[in-house]
Every structure is written in C-alpha cells, then in structure tokens.
Amino acid sequence: MKTTLAFVALASSSAAFAAVDFDSFDADGDGVISKTEAQVNSQLVQLFDQLDVDRNGELSKEEFSKVQ
Ligand SMILES: [Ca+2]
Ligand SMILES: [Ca+2]
Image 1: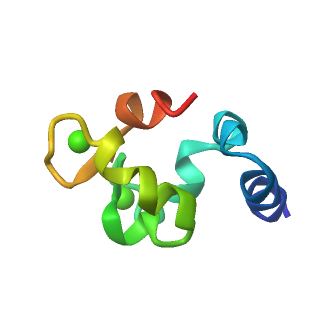
Image 2: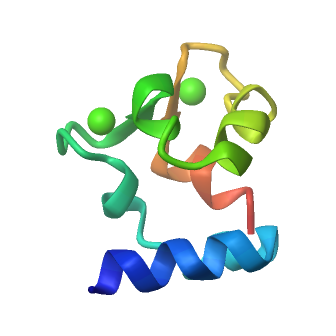
C-alpha cells in the first residue's frame, strides 16, 4: 500500500520524488537503483542519465537524492 501511494505521488509531480523511499525502487536491495529497476517509473527513466553523475549505470542513494 505504501508503494502504491508513492507511485501515485510520482505520477502527479516530479517533485514528489522527494517523498519516495529509495528502497522502494531498489528492488534487489543492493543499495543502488539499476536502470532495470528504474523502468518501473517513466519519469525516473528520463532522469536517469542526468542523475547518474558518475556514469556507472546505477543510481546511488546520494545520486537519487539530487532529484529533490
Ligand atoms: Ca538495486
Ligand atoms: Ca551512479
């Protein structure tokens, strides 16, 4: 239920990323969001390359936090 609410918030505004739990994207729990994991949200897919400042193909918690 918590995840559902988060995605509703995401759909309404990109600023709502701030309210989204990093862990809800990190499906395999390895501490980073892979491009595959990002696929669940089209906005995140579009922002992915901007956010991935070190270009390693994954978003760390720090990189993800920049979306706020
Ligand atoms: Ca992951
Ligand atoms: Ca990265």
